[in-house]
Length: 116
Image 1 (tube, helix red, strand yellow):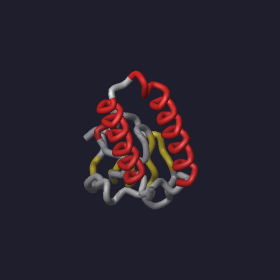
Image 2: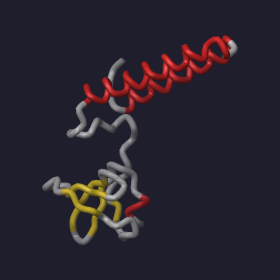
Image 3: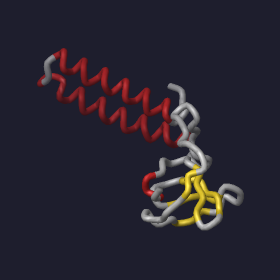
C-alpha cells in the first residue's frame, strides 16, 4: 500500500519503524512522536485499521477554544451575510439555508469533540 492511501490516524510500518499518519505528508513515530516527512509514493505496511469518527480526538496541539472562537466568527459572518440577502430570498429557501448551516455547524463541532 502507498502512504497516500492511508487515512490520518492509521498506524503503519515504514523502513522498520512504526508510525501514525498525522497529515497528508507527515507521520509521527509511534513511540517517540518524532515527526517524519513520508513520500506519497512510499510503500508501507498497514498495522491497524483507520480510526472511526467516534474514536477521533482533537489533535493534542489544537486549542479547542481557539477553534470554537474562529468557527463562531465565521458562522456569525455567514449569518450577517444571510440577513443582508434575506429580502431577496424566498422564505422557504432562507429556512433551508439556515437549517443546512446549523446541521453543518453541529457536525463540525461533533467531529472535533466540541460541544455547542
